[in-house]
Structure formats: C-alpha cells, structure tokens
Image 1 (spheres, rainbow, N blue to C red):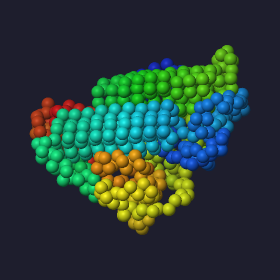
Image 2 (image 1 turned 90 degrees about the vertical axis):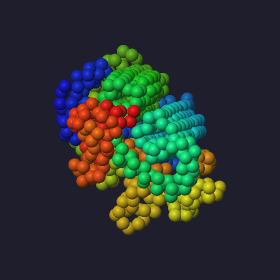
Image 3 (image 1 turned 30 degrees about the vertical axis):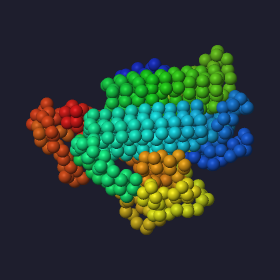
Image 4 (image 1 turned 90 degrees about the horizontal axis):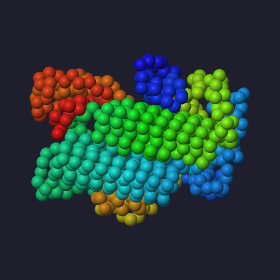
Length: 618
C-alpha cells in the first residue's frame, strides 16, 4: 500500500496493491487525485436532468437538448446524429505538438456535432438523458431498461412507475428509493421483494404492510404491529392516502419511526466481500455504490449495472463490459474504455467522448464504427501505433494547466473547466451541492436559470387536497411549485415538510409544472394525491434521503445483553434509543465489530453491524 496526497484537496489517500495491479493491466499511471475528488471531477461532465429548447444545427427544427445555448456546442437532432447524413471524420485534424492535448480535444469537442440527448434503443422517450432500452419514458435519467415510467432516475428493468430513484425489477412503484423485485410499493426505501405495501424501510418479503421497518417475510403489519387481514384492510382505508394532508402527516410519523429503528451498517443484498452501499448481486468490490446485476472485482464505482468486471472509477457503467477506468456512461459490450464518457461498445478507446462501436481511438469525438483514429483523423494501424506513444509523452511534457493551477498529464480525466456543462447542470450538484458563490470560488462555472415565459394558472394553495376532487381540467393548468411559494416569503427559516429553505431554492426549481395525462391516470388508479413540487424539486427530496457516496470507519453501536443501544453522546441523539429483543453473542458487553459505513459518525441513527442487526430482525 502507498499513501499519497491528493493534488486537488490535499488530503491523504491510499493506493492498495490490487489497485496498482489494475493500473498496470490497463497501462496507466496511478491517480494523483483521491477517489472522492476523481468522482466529483467525472460528475462535472455528466448532465442528466437539465434540458433546453433549441434548434437542430443540421435541419433547423426545434429540439429538446441537454446542451444550453451558451455551451458553444453544435447540436443535431438525435436521429440525424445517428444517421449517415453527415461524416464525423470531416472534423478530424492532425495532432499539433505545439498545443496541449486537452486544448486540442476541447477545440474538437466544439467543432464536432453532438446528439440532442444521449439515449439509445428508445421509443417515445425524448425527454431523457443517458437512457437505453426504454419505451414511453418521460423525464428519465441514468436508466437501462424500462417502460411507462416518468420522473425517475437509475431505473433498471422496471415499468409502470413514477417519482422513483434506484428501482430494479419492479412494477407500480411510487416515491421509492432503492426498491427491488417489488410490486405496488409506495413511499418506501431500501426494500426488496415487497408487495402491496406503503411506507417501508429496510424490509424484505413484506406483503400488505404499512409504516414499518426491518420486517422479514411479514404480512398485514401496521407500524410494526401484526393485524388480521380484516383489521389491516379497515385501517388502510381509514388512512385515506388519496389526501395530500394525510400523506404529509404520515410522512412525519414514519420519519420518527425510522429514526428510532436500528440501521444495518450498509444496504448490501446478495453480495460478498464488498464495501459501499445500495449494492445488489456484487462480489469483490471496494467503495461501490448503487450497483446491481453481477458486478465483480471493481472499485470506486457508482450507478452500475452488470455484467461488469475489473473496472475502476466510473459512474453509469456496465452492460457486459470490463477494464473500464475513469469513465461515465460507458460499457455496453466493451473493454479497455478509459478516460472518457458515453462510449458504447468497442475496445481500446482512450480520452474520447460519445464514440460507439469503435476500436483503437484516442482523443476522438462522435465517431461510430471506426478504428485507429486520433482527434478524429484516420490513420493506418502502423501509423497509429507509432504516433500514440509520442502523444502520451507530449501530454506529460506539455501538460494542461487549468485556472486553479491544477496540472493534467496523461492519466488524468478531463478538466472540469472544459466540460460543456456548468456545475449546477450536472450530477455533481446532486451529490456534492454547492451554492453559486461556492462553485465559482472552486473554479466551476454556474448556469443561472433561463427566463420562463409561462404564467401560473393554479396557485399551490388551490390544488385539491384529495385526488377524487381533481377535475380533468387539471391537465390544462400551470401549477405553482411549493418551493416557489416559499422562496417569495421573507424568512430564513427551513420548511421541514417541503425540504427547502424558504428564501432560496437551490434545486433547479422550475417554479411551476404541469400534470401529464399518464401521471393523472396513475395517481387516480392508485388513489394518490397530486404532488405540490415541480419534478426537479421532487427529485431532490428523494436523493436527500440517500446516504452520501462516502464511507466512514465505525464500531457497532450495540451495547450489550438485552440492554439499550443508545446514542446520547451528541445532543442531537438524546432520547433516541433501541432495546435489544434477544441475546447477542457479545452478551452484556458492547459489540466490538468494526465496519465501513455511509452513516457519518455524527448522524442520529443507531447503526449496527451485520451480526447484531440480523439477530434483531431475522
């Protein structure tokens, strides 16, 4: 193991022996930035949710695109971009040894047309970014495989759902976060194999359950108490979840129930030898988050779907791929795809953007089914193999230096200041939120909201409380977002119900929104009230409930035999306690098990190791 100092944040980080083996395998130098800074740097290149109206530079027709008008990018309609009506190679140039590589790549990026949105194999899914194998999707991002889904992110093989994040192999889900293999499950989180249930947390095999935590293969439970079928159905009818005010009251009650329940140190399902959180069907992986479907022998990965193996440092990877490094939205039957983004298929593609089905590319943009190209210029195999070592040496001899004085040689990902997106347009803002002032101070650009030309026709306070009272004419209304109401209040208080400061919303709030026909139909059929927030603000409320993509070394908080596990060491934890229900192996002594967890030490929750947790819930 070797300890190094991050060239960005100046903190120490470790490079393990198995890491060095991986870097040798793909012939790249070890990183100079720590894993978290590398992750943040990649994220500044990925825009999942910011969409704009624009004109296709090829046809002149209206398009919806992820590139704003001031990005300086040339944008084509998606289908035109994928057609043979133009030639990406026409923008290629010979390598210039008087300029840094990243400067030349940036110039190529702004010459080469890009598709309006990055989605493939989709039908009726125009309002989507980084999506594949989808049908009838609306405002979808970072997803692979789905049908009839709206307002969602990180969807895998699911259908007929809306307002969800991290949904896997599920159907009829609403306001769920990391729910898998479930049917008709609402307002739930970190649960698997659940049916006809609402307000669940960390449940497995729950059927017809409500407001409960840590259930295993239970039926007809309400607030963790068993009921007969008749009692259960009567109580559920009394809750009347078609009412918005009833839902809000239940959210508050359930939040208190969750806080007093024990937490497993990590949400890891059917996986072996892994560290991270929200992991399913994964093996031999380090610091991986939100992964599923056979991920193996990898590290520092976020939002990946397998099969995938032997890959480091990436977001949105997988789908039958291996040997990926420092990349995003990359894979789909590929290997040795490094330092790039939106690379689907092929092998030995380095420092490239939006290239597909190609082999042996370096510094290319927008190529399809090409081989042996540098900066989009075609070479013979012999010419390519002779020129590439010279370019790598040149990248080290003449590195790119950004405005903050950070040096980029071969082995570094693209500098954030060259991204076509501003910081708050990207997922970096979701995982590492900054204010405009903070972002600019750290060297990032910031995108101010574009002027909106619509008039609100329905005030938030005038939305019907119950779904049964909503008329069909709601589809014609432009509804005020609740955060827009709060932002106009002269107060610095925090609205706990809506989850946003009342003086300013930093969640890409659109100020108003519409109800679409499929949404109204879904809410009526499931007896659920209309939302009060715009889709962006609703998305941010969901992702706030996820743990961060970071691990802390901690010790199990279980205190002893039939004793009380209590976290009163910090003022915020006083009064939060849990009494064990059975005897544990450590009897009357505190548990000494240690682990890596995404629960920070100062948080209020009671966090148990796997052994103590299973003793209590199985």
